[in-house]
Every structure is written in structure tokens, then in C-alpha cells.
Image 1: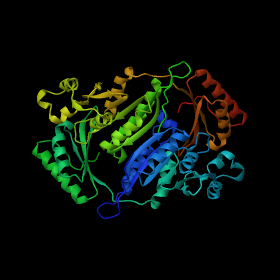
Image 2: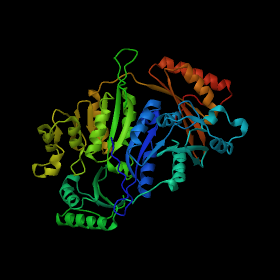
Image 3: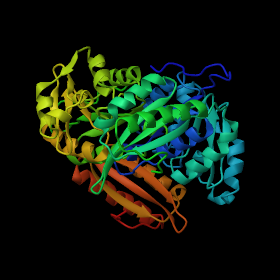
Image 4: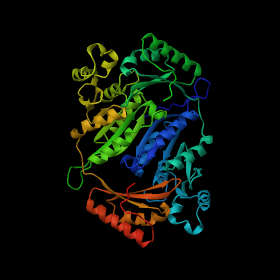
Length: 261
Length: 261
């Protein structure tokens, strides 16, 4: 089980963490290529929250509730995407309520939001399903199609349609506690990974506070590697990048500094 | 925890299941958009294995070993992607060995594979890292860049670079036990999800053996929904699709049958 990474909000360590639970048979069958993981991951990095785990589960109440209860004690926030629409396969709301042991009922605030979009006659039982909210939850407005997401405890429940999910993420962001941002510096090299591994590991050993990852690519027209350094301190990041470049130069290895990818 | 979905290999139920563990800080930071989930998901559906869970974890030995030990009792196969390269952040092999409680050592078969690509002088310690294999594992050949993946117990360890991962998946496929394929039938409708939800739920209630999912889309130029029916029996699938079309027609709702997406 993940350990709680949250630490006191001091200048040296203000780490806020998150996990993402992606809900939907369509991702697991390969019918739909998920894009929400990348959207949320990039957004979290940008606002200073560390995404530390993602799970994808099917439209199955026990699987959803089980994953949620496994994740929520371990991270400051757990986001979910998918399964809050009007059809019978949309079971996220009930699964979340089950995980929290609370009731689900028609929420007058959510009904009011749906009324902004639908005439009274069009508020079918199926559409009203989207106004069923677990007891005690706060709503997350949906600027695209009105049916809201919600926040209960540290869990933020969002739609699966990428455009709606992205809009809800913007809406919810001001309500999130954030930590120090990880900033990054990328060095590109046309060398093979195996050739730079030694100097890279030596540099990592010198800077345990800087995260260093090596990402090779193999295309028809080119091969090479991106060396990515990440830290919360701009000063330490620059020092580590300088040390790495010094070592690459010393070993006669090609590199382009601060490469755009 | 996931229940074991594997059932006796009879005509009525031959279900083989899998989970995927994606390993890498770069996915969780948003730097890299994962494509391996979609590749593996589509491939599993095509060969008759049901992918029922995906997890993404960082380059952290405890997180990798913990997730692996949580997943492997629950599914017939657990695939992993990422973290088997030559650099210090490639720790998947050690984490897998730790999860299984076995030693890791230089594997002569893996060294022989690397020799096909590298001259003796180029077999640096970093590159030889890629020939370290947990005791008892079988190798998975790598047609792209030689450094192999491996199979230990029900765990299949593959590279993270999409092109290499796809090649390893092809190599390993003949060694997998597979079940009955889920086949699908897609009906497109320009109606809103809320409008078709009633007839869709009624049809699902009539065919509990057919999986039915509703996938709306919202683009600038068009809105609509794909209704996807999935079953192992072509006969039941056709019956369910016919029933759904009958109901949509009866309710005066638009649809295109068997729509290409």
C-alpha cells in the first residue's frame, strides 16, 4: 500500500500528492484511448501536486469502490474520471457512495444545474440520474453540459468525456491545496542510453535531491535520449544540469542543452 | 482486491484475464503520454484475454513490488511496461525479483542476445545491466534492440518504448493461454445519451450476458453517442443488437447501425 507522502507545509518540504482512478470498460477493451491520464498528469505537475499512482478499473461497483478505498488513505487527493452519465453503465456515483458508506439521493443543487440546460419536460428519469449525489458531497460545476461532478472527502469525481473532464479540472483547481512545483530541465543526446548511463548515474549520486530520468526514443529517422532532471529548487536543478553537462563534455559525449522535445 | 476471474476452460466460460502495470515517473509527471495501455488493451481483446485492471506507478522499488504482489494473485497474467533499460532509473528487474523473493544475476542467454548487437568492447557495465534477469525467468526476445524482457510466474516484463513493447507483445503472444473472444457491435446515434438511456437499459435487462456501454462524444461540429454491445456469442450479440434497434425505432430515435467510428 502506498505510504502517505504528504508532509508538513514548511519551506523545505511542501509535498501534496494525488492518485487518479480511471473508470470504464472502454479503456480496458482498447475501444477508447484514454487521454485523461496525460491531461491530469500535466495539470498536476503545473499546479504543484504530485500524481503518484493511476488505476484503471472496469464499470463494476465492487472494483470501483475497492480501488477507491485502497487509494484514498494514501494520497492527499484521489481524482476519478468516467461513469457519471445518464445510462445504466454509469455507476460511479453509487460506487463512491458505497465506498464512503453514505446514501445517494437527488440533490436539489444538481437538479437546478440540469434545469439550466433542459426544459422541465426533458428532465427524464435518465437525466435526473445525473443529479443523484452522495450525501455530504460538494458539487463541481460542469461548464460544458451542466451535469456536475462532486467532491466527497478527498475524492474528486469528474466526467470521462475529455472536454468535460478538462473543464471540471479547471473549476476544481482553485479549491485544491498545492505544494512546491517540480521544475524540470531536459538535455537531449544523440548517444545511446548505454553510453551515457555511467555519467548520468554519477550525477544522480551527487544530487540525491534531484530526480533524474532517462527516456530513449527509437524512430525510423533518429535515435537518441532525453535526460530529464527535476527538482523543487531552481538553484539545485541548475547545479545538477551543469554537473551533468560537464561530465558529458568530459567523456566526449554529444548533447544539446535544454532541448525542446 | 480483485477476485480471480479465471474459470474452467469449458465451452460456456473460458475467460482468461490480465492486468497491466505501467512503470515510470514520466507518465505520472505528464512528460510522456502513455500509448502502451491502448496497445496492450486492443491486443488483449483481439486474442481473447480480458484486461481488467491497469496501474501506473513511479520508478520506486517498493511501489513496483507492492503493486505487482497486489495484482499477480488476481489475474491469469500481469504485464509490465517500462524500467528495463541501462540507466540508474531502470529498476523494474530488481523490483520484480524482490516481489518474487528471488535473486537477480547476469543471464548468459541475455548476454548472448546483447552480443548480437554490441561488440565486446561496447558491452559496458550499463549495457550489461540489461542482461540481469531474475532467477527462474524465461526470456522474451526483443527484435528491435536485442535487450530482452522476461516471464516469471504469471508476470511478463516488457520494455516501455512503445515500438519495443509492441514487438515483445507479438513475441510473447504464442506463449499465452487465451479464452473466448469478446466480439462487439456498435450502433451510433445522434440523440443525446439521456434520450436513449431508457431503451438502452431495458435492452441490457433483457440480455444480462451481453455487455452494453454508452459512449457519448462532444465535438465542436457534432454530438452523439456510440452504443457498444459485447458478447462471446455472435448469436446473442446479433439478437441483442436487433432488440435495441427495434426499441430505438419504436421510440422514434435516430440511429446508424454497425457504425464505423
